[in-house]
Image (cartoon, rainbow, N blue to C red; front, side):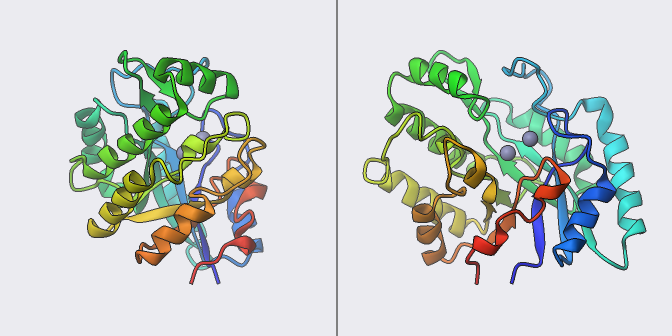
Length: 268
Ligand SMILES: [Zn+2]
Ligand SMILES: [Zn+2]
């Protein structure tokens, strides 16, 4: 029985919806949840140029204080009905570790729960790409790396770097959607289960050894070119067998998606 949704966005998200926080909370209560983690996209690190056209991947820096204040009020409002965790989905961007650490050092004391995610991939020419933006932009990534094998290998290498990185004492202890590279896999099919098996096994063993947990993210089920959760069932089973713990997350960007498809999850 899953009692909470641990990956939820908010009206503060610049690429999300304007659904109110009350609507998210009511949606969680309607599902019978006891807990929710609001994990808004943290601002991208200082000096990093968002490669997406609208440059709206993260919260604007000047909105962070307002976000935290609003969340503290929300916690108080619902304190008898729902445990509300305030947090962030923090981007891990290769080469911007110290800027990310600065953010966490500053805001860490207010964070109840957080996720560390890789959305940005550095190509062999040093350019950054947003992995999950669109099929067309995934095509650009493929051209930069030449083969899907290289794209996937670079992605999982970056996830491994995120795990090893020193982001200070407030570093999130849960990795977000660790197979996000598959978001467009029906357009760009690639069976990496044999080729990258050792790399993935090593990553999962490291997750376990370092005491991290994983986001079991249902959003991929609803992406038309993905249709599997993150991680996919094969990686999920391997992680479970290693004793890695998971937290269910809908990655909702609208209130009605809180807890979406959690009935399909097998978490024991
Ligand atoms: Zn988002
Ligand atoms: Zn994400």
